[in-house]
Image (cartoon, rainbow, N blue to C red; front, side, top):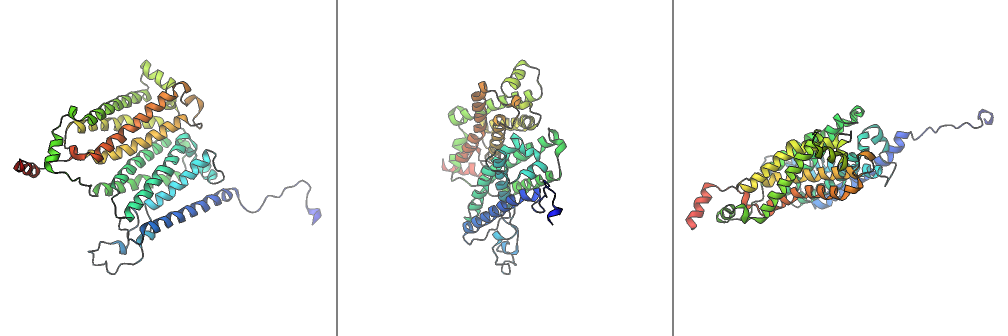
Length: 394
């Protein structure tokens, strides 16, 4: 037996192939995270029966109480059967946080093979930033909405903010992958993003169909609020000015990525935001979405602050706030991240100007959403019967 061994020859191990050696820790952490999440859901529910398919799958036990099958429904708690949407998305958010932490060097050995072989675009600065946002902000929103469901409270506002954030994230991510530097590296793993396109459409439809929280205001109070001119509403006046500045900046950056020959555009893209030239295409796609979708919406918001009765603004301001918050976090973080090639990173001499400008740009929609939530009287429609009732009391 000893003669059969050749000196200096290393026999490769017959166990733990490379893919499995890297996948096992990720699989273990994934199972633990899912178990913790389900445990949280169980104790948060406190024995209640969820009836919202955004949280759990439909089952006989979750049918409407007036249904003839209610009495014969299963007594098994539907929150632990066929978990869907928020449970699955919470699970994926935790995995995204692991990916971002590993790519930044805080941990190692969890998702290296998957990211390298399956979705290499997640190793970009933009990919890391959206994983951070999904693993922290989206995960927190999922837990908050799950808790609200378990306590029979409304989660409509949180859901609309989440909807805008998720849609903006996935649209920029998919389009950037298709037309950018990593378009040739797209594999079958790219199809894992398909649920993030289809499910938000269904979830958004359900969220908009949920009843709004009706403020306790009389017709006279609403009419009095809507008769005030803009100069009598100083908060709205400031918001209009902020939205006008945002619209101007949005148009300017759109012209920059469209290769406007003006000297100011040339100077801006090379001396202030060189990240807009990054061949990964995420920043260019982001600015074009701002130009063709966000800019018209900003104009509509200004109109709604001038003309009373635009009842659509409170809901869509939440969607808008979530979308811009996610977009600005990813754009700002990617511009300063070390994974961005040095020629496309923000120069140090304009770092503070760039930071303040983009943070203020992100705060504008948040202020608009807060204004709509806390003082919705100006946006409430006044019916003819309410007006007649108000005249009788005068």
